[in-house]
Image (cartoon, rainbow, N blue to C red; front, side):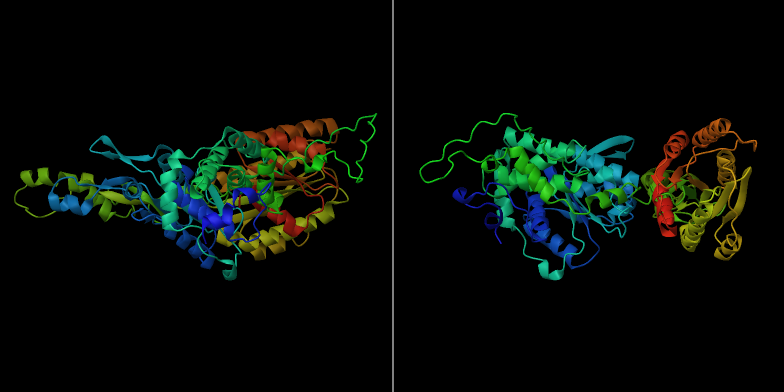
Length: 600
């Protein structure tokens, strides 16, 4: 299938505005072709799909579109800085007796593409290194105390294999890539041919430097980005480059309406954070003029306003709006939680010397259970072999290792986290809320062991607060403690927050990351000293909320009243907590809200 047949009809048949493609394969295939035309300018693509026919078909389409000799490198999941940016060549150094340096993977991919598997697990450090290389087009490596610069102009294909909506590639990295493609759910029968071959792409790359983007189209794309709530300044720039690459692929001297609509559909649509606002309705004049006379045939010669051509910016925006998913708001709500494992709330990462995921090496002797890193030790010793052989000629041919060369492995593992429910058990509605909380705690305990998470329950009513369920991962113990939860009485909100904070501080001292989930309507009527009085109770509650904020304990406040209560929102602001109104939430809703709020 030629791209000219798919995108660019003959000038007399050029449509008023582009219609959205019904074929789910068309846009991904076009994105692969455009990325091959201008890999450095477009930055790359985030491809969300699990391993399967759709992802392999897209990668094959990209490979077929690349011109001969284009470098293509696949990045290992656990790549080190020496391999990524360049560093010491261990084998060459040991054989030559002098430092021998090797180019990194990014420098090897200069002028081509890099494929990053499992992009949703990319650490912030890896994302920052890749982002810096994409921005500057070069990599820097330290060699013999000097900074060596190597060109690294490449495009990145980030394969996002996340199973949940909150598992996705880091936004700092995805923002630099033009395309965000979702191949999930595309059946094998809908997979088509590539949109362009290597010959078409080679011709387009030759035309690309002479292809222009008119000022009117650039302004239309910028306004469309603003209407869709796209805050990043990179998005309209990438959209202009996509329009320019599309024009070059279609043999045009400058990008037109169809190329602009395609760019809006591929770049701006997936980045949208809101639906475009409808245009304001024009007020009808009070005194309408009489209708113009009809001609002899009875037809009105006055052109209809609906038939007038729309401005270019409106047509571009319509193309982007047509690509928005129907469940846009639901997906945006799911993406409000942290994305990568490094940002999730499953406990803080801690360095350990003995177990966990590899986290590099450090200088030091293998004592106290630390494990020697043989390769790192040899790398540290290799540059000094020539000098050491001169001072110790009795050991020819041997690699001489000194204590200063020792390198030990570092590991990191995610620490435990503790989820503390602070529940308002006062009033006539307490029984229903406690039943919901009981179900939510049992649901979360079922996953607690896998997530290295403890769950606790603090209930406040009457004159004070009680620890009903100490931090535990035992479902049997939890069910026993939750069998009969008391309810009724006043609302000692300050006592509940103080008890929750005290438990959080205790968990902190044990190395556990605490999270508070406060369930209340925010209307306190019992002070911290157990005495009644709404004014004093509200002030005590605000003081306790500010203490939670000052302690830096992450928290969420769930307003479970019949309708959202301003008192709960004000209390959440004092706590620095995320407010969440769930007036009719069941046990599953509470559990999901608690997990979403804490990034779990």
